Length: 313
Ligand code: SF4
Image 1 (tube, rainbow, N blue to C red):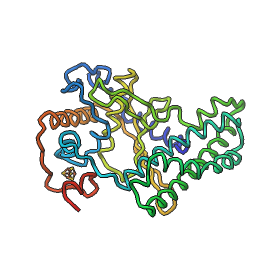
Image 2: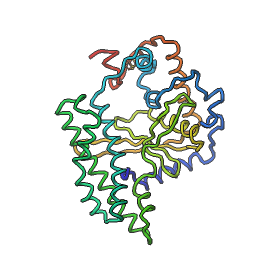
Image 3: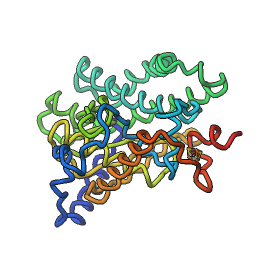
Image 4: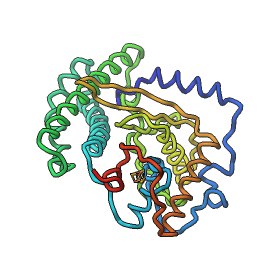
């Protein structure tokens, strides 16, 4: 995740900290208090994914009924596969960046670019194979995705090289370990156990920074409900690791006409967001326990992953 623009991150964080300087998260809404009436899951031994709950395309929760009760899974579309691959490339490129710097030392940015670019095709092709992409997409779609992955990889590499040069230019004594930590994120794909809150055992948080900011990467359009994922992950980290998480970032990552587009939205993960997430979780448990089809809302967004199942076409 060398492409994170740390100065922008610091700026967003400073703005939010000023705005919420006098606001405290209530103790009853900290994940480590998972055994209280508010946070403890209403049903035992059932666990939901954070995205499954947070991605509230459906106001009646029919998506939960279809997946968890009727056993109907959403079709795997181009967007689904693209999401898998962008996340995988982002995480893989951070690992390769680190291993290259560990094995070659603190090279200049331009040298880093030359080294990493040699790996581009093999990394992209191996991901396409690993995720069995040819099974889900047509050959034209695979080619389109491959091109976008090349563009994305180039972007990651150039940003990493630029950041490496900037960091090296600012420090007097360059120590390999500390420079690498400033060029690549501290924890990429953090694994968290959310079971104490009725969430999955293996939640994967895209990035967790040393300053306790969590980052969730989205590869589709901006949706207001994405913020609930931050609340879910913050609660899960607090319950599993007892580390307070107050801020989170949603990073929107896309490739449009051969260019990478990135935008960020930072959130304070306060009481309101936490309560809303817990209400969503509890409603999902209700649907699961009752086993009843909640029906469709008056209208469905065409971008809902179950649209073809519920509305045909
Ligand atoms: S298509 Fe409509 S009813 Fe079906 S899950 Fe999506 S929003 Fe709900």
